[in-house]
Amino acid sequence: MKVKIDQDGCIGCGTCTHVCDDVYVLDDDGKACIVEQYRKGAPDSGEVPDSLASCASEAATSCPVQVISTE
Image 1 (tube, helix red, strand yellow):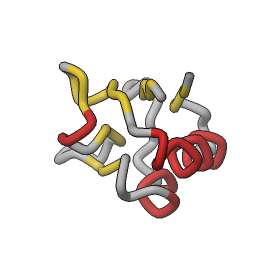
Image 2 (image 1 turned 120 degrees about the vertical axis):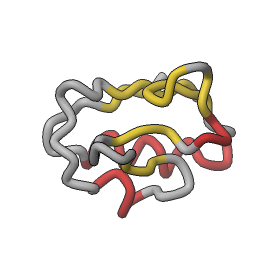
Image 3 (image 1 turned 60 degrees about the horizontal axis):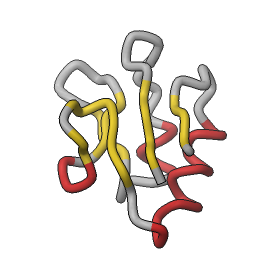
């Protein structure tokens, strides 16, 4: 599953990290990013294994500003 975060729109609430800390972390600026293990180039995009797809999707749905997209 591919994951993309619009860091400009991220408010740094940490909901994604609470729901799925295997995929999401907050960077030094307090913005959501993909854990290093699953990043594809930039910290705002990555690809997670099928075993974490449900968790990653739930976190995206839980984001109050809807800046996380999955496909």
